[in-house]
Image (cartoon, helix red, strand yellow):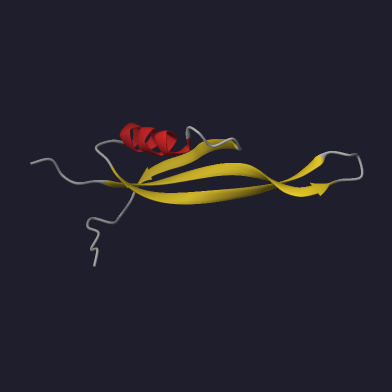
Length: 76
């Protein structure tokens, strides 16, 4: 039986604020979103998150993928 692994995947993205600066450019807000992903490898976790974001029109990138210390998730 393969060991269950969880990965922490962070996505960084920019979104429009609806404001314009003095130069006439749109003001962007930089944010991040964290996921806990069950996957077999870091690449698998990255692929799962990329699939989730594929249709998003904002500028985004996967900033980090690291194995989590979490070994089990209990859902109620």
